[in-house]
Image (tube, rainbow, N blue to C red; front, side):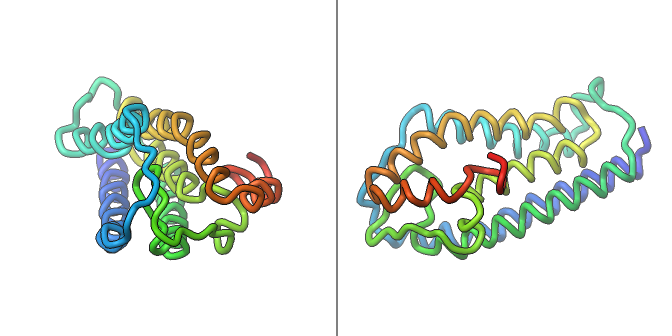
Length: 197
């Protein structure tokens, strides 16, 4: 393994995770001040969040800190680190935009807050779930940045588990709250990838 290239990928991943935390923290604090009127949190959703956290933070964090599991390492390449860094940077840009657009409506869980609005501007004009789009880009970036088959790909597995366990429930909840307005919005947008899916 090219140690300096591998180290650059790991440093880029750590910086991306720090950026993720810095972006999320103020929105998380503000959201706690807004009353929740509907809470659909379930054991399945909690499992999805844990899977995403394990795949996108815990397992790669252990790898970056300790090198474990070394047997799954492969040769790091400069092009892969560049692609991974671009994916992570794009993810952070979308992540920040989604938080700004959601504002007081943001929640880590399946919740509707007091005076909840249907947001369809900014990245929400292109896809219904741009925050998941940012998570997907983070997971893809992680796969390129970490030259380890387990730590690198764990993010994609964690993201997939969260997305497929949660997105249908989230859309059903939005249909219950916003009715035909959300149905019209669904007709105009894709779920995750603009113009494709």
